[in-house]
Image 1 (cartoon, rainbow, N blue to C red):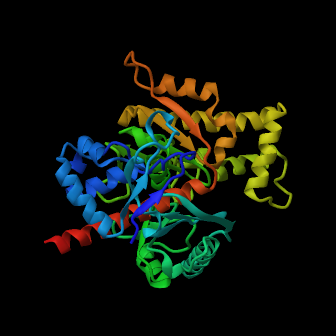
Image 2 (image 1 turned 60 degrees about the vertical axis):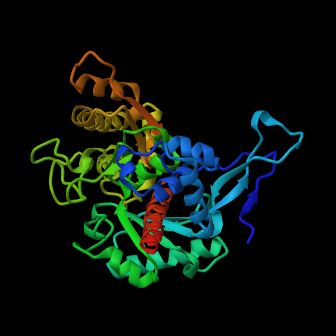
Length: 425
């Protein structure tokens, strides 16, 4: 079998995916897995560089990469010549890369407005992506049927059958225990305490990993975005709800029970506005789209008129605010102040070097206008040092799917490398 994949000289070598610098705790992982993940992160890298990066002997790298090539997980690639040399003289440099066609996974975001799915190959390259409207809050049976449908359509768009996938990652909003695969509560499901991952595995006939959707945004940034080179950062998502993901030492922090980082359900007002979770005074109830829509109905004079879809209602509200309507601007300004409060609490609790704002509501610039960030700075403890940088990342709807696919790739890597450890022992 030919294990080398040629990269034409006028093309750039694969960029890789996953954290560029391994977490400190990763040194406890088996060396073979560290080698594989270093290659995956680099995209294309020489054996000598792997040995240097991991501080191990070149002979050890040669042995382990030979095993990984034999297993069909890595391959040799023709790397671009240094300095842009196009003369073609001498033997072309050889590097290691992940074999893209070794495995393919699907990442799915389930929502009450729109479902999205992304197919990624083993090297993290997109093969296909699909989105489709959702039908709102559904029974678990109907949501599982929607899951099977969108996975099948995404696989077909990539020119394959569902059975050719090596795993599926799923993101849902709400209180999700990623370890057990249980959904304790989700605004998109009409029941609580569900073994959703196990039920999805039974319906799909594939390994399934599940997590909170905000965690998957952080995972998408960690694997494909700004987080690849940053050991610590926080992500805040503003969409149908308000979510948060926290990365510490290039690892997702989920809490002792896997249910941490629920920023949207921290309380900002006793006996305040009703939240979707059933409690009152949650931050989400003042910032998320349903909170804005609640106030928009009155501001736009639609109390006695037929209800509009939330998206259409918010677009009208935003257009009025941009046109100078005082009531509409006040709604966004108030939501921005509550967002500033939430961001300041993140800084005071975790002190991240950067906070990334993401999600569909980032289109509404009033939420992160200068006065909002100034308000955050006023609420942060005065230490005499600059506050963390706040960046807005507008990936689009497929952001969530990329994070879910990264979750599936991570779980797949653990399964494959674990199997190799068992064989070696």
